[in-house]
Amino acid sequence: MGKRHEAIGIKQVIRFEWMQQTTNLLLAGFNAKAIRQELHEFLADRNGSGTEGERGDTSRTQVVNMLMNIWASPDSALLSFRDASLAFLRENPSMAFAVHWGMISAVYPFWFNVARQTGRLLTLQDQVTQTQIINRLKEQYGDRQTVSRYARYVIRSFVTWGALKDSYANGCYEKAVPRGIDDENLAILMIESALLATADAKGELGLYLNNSAFFPFNRPMMTGDFISQRSDRIEVVRYGLDDALLRLKPNKIMVAGKNVPPPEGGG
Image (cartoon, rainbow, N blue to C red; front, side, top):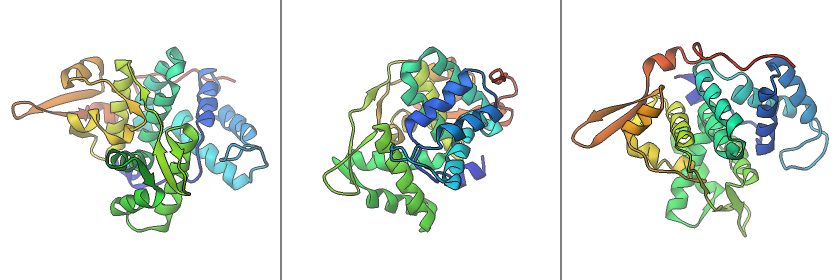
């Protein structure tokens, strides 16, 4: 899976409404070139804090590039997942929060890993600090300045999305009320996003059913057999008496998107 899992990539705060704007354009049939132009115009006076104000060209371009990478023109290995997520979003617009969370996790595993470390800490304590999250990330990515800087963008994004709440002290956060996920197809898409965010695209069933990267959600419990029956991109491998391993089907990793037509161009 390579460079996608090693890269950090999140160079600005990504607001939820910007993700919505991108998928609205995609669902409306705009092609990639038109979406890029529309996003530049949309973000010309919108800052990561949510306030209005002129945004610099470099900052705006970074955000537009990220939004394009997430939804409009993702890595070829993610196209079939993108198309399935977009199709679900078209039919279930009220579940956009979880769909966007899954898509950004697959495209930028750094987001997924920041969420995972945040969720782990929140299982142990009621509040979590930015420093605690970053220290855990450094164990995984190394003690690089970019890890600290970009992690702050992701954490701030969590707050703007409503997944975390600012606490009484600067750099301290509380967990927001989790959102219930009742739709099993959506829950399976979220599991697929976690597999795509994992370098070897496999892991024990329990690790994905209870993954702390999905701390903003309450998800249904499912068996491995049920997941594999409902998804043509995930398979279950049994080992031992009661243990199950989930993994992405190898052919789906290699040729993802080739059998699924992209959304119609236009605009």
